[in-house]
Image 1 (cartoon, rainbow, N blue to C red):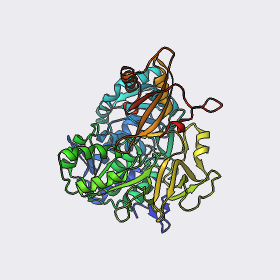
Image 2: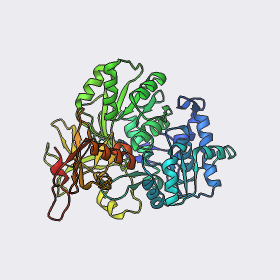
Image 3: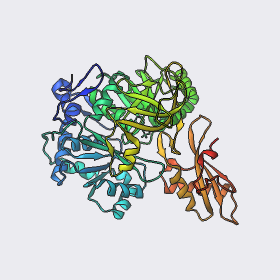
Image 4: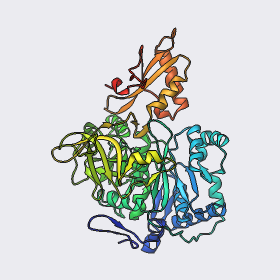
Length: 514
Ligand code: 3UK
């Protein structure tokens, strides 16, 4: 039992009726003798648990001093660095709701989030000024850089009384994208990080105080937030942070320098790392397991990684709405090419179109029940009603179970794509392509590359008199890279005479898939 928090034999969590989740995650460690232990390591600094607790208090006080009150939203567009922890937990301890969006987005996405969230303050890493500053012109909100915030924090008090809340009260939000329409703010409760950290972090991965966790997936991604922040803080272990873009070079450098025991990546990165290992083998002493999520991990990547590094990659499916992995492989029980089995404490069902359970082995839509699930989408009652039904969450994924009960991913039930583990809407790429003067219409679908990983492929209808070729393809790719988050650009462009459509004119993307 940790500070009155208990998991019953049914794995349901019991929490004190008035509490603040920053206390067990941050403050507890000093009292338990970990004050001098490293909570965070980066290439530039080490932050101990005592320093972290003090800086979280200063950050919370600095937010209150700026006039924010409990319930206000703080939009934090912050790279992976210790200040992410100070802002996130300082806000929570003061009752303020942190909202950390994807840091790879463009100005119009941020302007939308400023408006939708009704945030009182935006804090951003100066690296993102090129997108944040134009967004602030479009939708003015009080804003400052992380550096300015850190300077302001120095004058703030190092003590802060936690704002007490109900375990089911709103705690933080994460934005998730859909195939059409704007990103949706998934509202998570105080309880949710406790549930995912204990049930997946501790009970499946076996994270303990002695682990060092390094997540190549960034903190803004619910996957990275768990791996790189909540699991280490829940167990009193150490998180490694790096603000650079994860590449084989940067990740290998971190694996060698910090010798993490747990490494968390996405399939695209594992594929790139394997290509680099083919050229120059390396060993990673101390590493006891690797985790993959965001998109399905092909069995072949599992096999090659094990051969090259001696460690397994545990694939697991999670979502922003569920907060973290709800079906996963474990060290004791894993089957390559599958997402594994439900995490103890989470329930999963595969349902047909009438929402009846499918026969064993048949495919259907995956629904899950999770105590870490978001309560609702902010400002989107219809989306909430569609996705969250009677305590169950519609994942939008098609799954089947093999004869031994392992869950096998079969694709999305909508047109959404995962590229490098991050959402990508075909509609958004199509709108960008249509912005080119030569393009009449476009349809985007996923296509598997040589590593069996999905990337966007565009089917383009040109205006009369225009002709497609390598030069136009380069232009279209460049346009998408410039306008959209860069990972969203189509890796292939095919010129076609017309697009398949329904009688009502809706593009039938499924007909364009291979
Ligand atoms: C897909 C997978 C097959 C699937 C996430 C771990 O990815 C995360 O959250 P998102 O909200 O996306 C959720 C959707 O992504 N997906 C994720 N993992 C897998 N498909 N195999 C997988 N292993 O479509 C799911 O509905 O961005 C992952 C932890 C926390 C997360 N938020």
